[in-house]
Amino acid sequence: MDIVVTGYAGLEGSIAVYNAPACFPKLKERYSESFFAVFENADIICEASQSKICTETEEPEGECDKAAGTSTEGAELNRLYTRYHESGLVEDGSEGGVLAALWRLLKANKSGGMYAQKSIPVLQQTIEVCEMFSLNPYRLHAPGCRVWLSSDTGELARAAATAGVPLNVIGFTSKGVAIRRTDTEGDSSLRRPEGDELDKVTLYFID
Image (tube, rainbow, N blue to C red; front, side):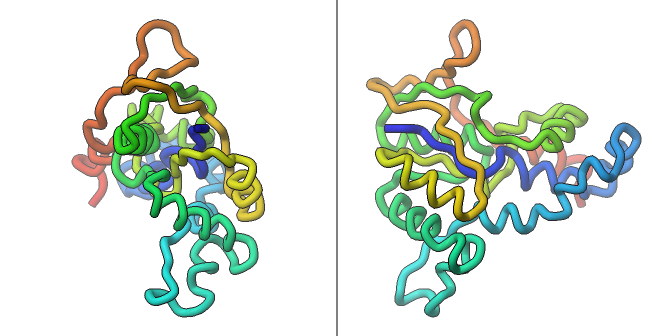
């Protein structure tokens, strides 16, 4: 199966760091505010990425479709997320970022995998924030960044495109239990998640 990522790695976590009173002045010393203008529209990006699990009995009519973008743009992605979640084929990066989601998803499915980290969507603004505070964007809080195991990636890609959500195929499942990165030299097995990078910052800076 394909390993697919939708949304941006570390987005919500990097926005939290950017907005922290102790962090913003440090970033402003190096970058202009206009560079981070994309963060001003982040609510729209995050809302589109975070599909919602819905059932007819739990949600009023129309609310499920609205959960991922507008009722017309995000409806199909929302339905796919519900279906994939019920099958145990999707995880989000709310705790430990996209790499933690990848690790949990493959372990839950008792599968190994091969992946290219450089194929994971990430904003340059997130990278700059993370470099400033020595954080790994791929292990940073990102509930809107989801990892999927898909045998019909075309269907998922069409739904993501309609919703305005970035999507990349980053690898594929494999036999065994090893989860290996393919775009780096040497042994690069994905290790067990050890917490969220955001914890490093909240401990010192964020109220």
